[in-house]
Amino acid sequence: MVDASSEVNPPTDRERLRKHFQKFSDGDNTYMQGWDDLWQTGFLPFDRERPSPAIVDTLKSRRELVENSWVIENGTRRRKRALVPGCGRGYDVLLFASCGYDAYGLEASENALKACKEFATKSGDQYPVWNKKVGQGQLHWICGDFFKDDWCRDADGKTLSFDLIYDYTVRIHLQITNWLAALTAAQFLCALSPSLRPNWAFRMSQLLAPPPAVLICLEFPTYKEPSSGGPPFALPSAVYLQHLSRPGETIPYDENGYVIEQASSETNKKALLRIAHWKADRTHKIGEGTDYVSIWRHK
Image (tube, rainbow, N blue to C red; front, side):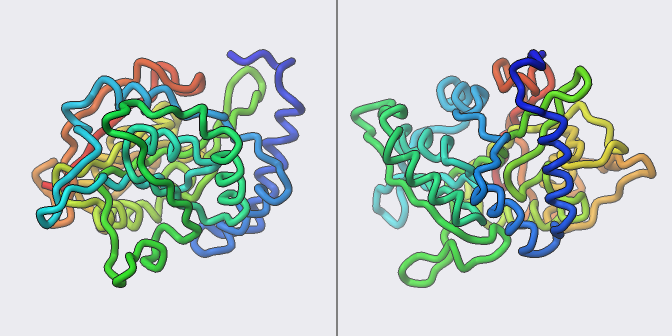
């Protein structure tokens, strides 16, 4: 539990955020503008200043699942491409580049990307190359809408696919009457209205390259009651399983907001297969004991 004395007017911060986002819609670009406004004003209680220990542990100890950072494509060896949607200040992007991936940080906020570039210039040496033989990958900072294609085309106009996608959003930690609330700093899953989850799953399936490419999800918040609303919206593991098994389909929920689980054999052509799932040994304080990591591939 975080000592309240270490927080700066946290209930006021939480109320300020809620009032701020009441002016925007999660169904159009005005919601993205809401995040850009926060970066512009410097009101950033969500900045955790480092990658989650869970993704660091995954890259170090689950090599049989994540594999190396090179791939053969059309007879040519190239670095794998890693995508971090809603990358915030870019800590995870720098982490993947240090592991040898060509790392792409996607943000809807131009001001966030400005912060990414400044941080990479000033503090990139905090992310030394993991393996000198592999070397460091290139950094790509992109401003765009995750759900559109204009940001992910190569020089020939071809839509890029990615060998690794990391779905996790920066958390806002606020002390509120003896419990911690968390919000996300991007427009991704736990910040999205549940009605947009089919679009999220479909887009992930579109952007993920064929096997052995992987989608890594750090699942949060798994413990929350759906009736409590959001953001962050409750995300038990079953939500990931149902939506990623049927990307683009409307998935039924019961009257209490819990996803209605269907047989895993009932999938569609865009389905992703969960190949690993475990409780994170280390993660940020708010998710200790409840955060899970899942890894997905195309069937």
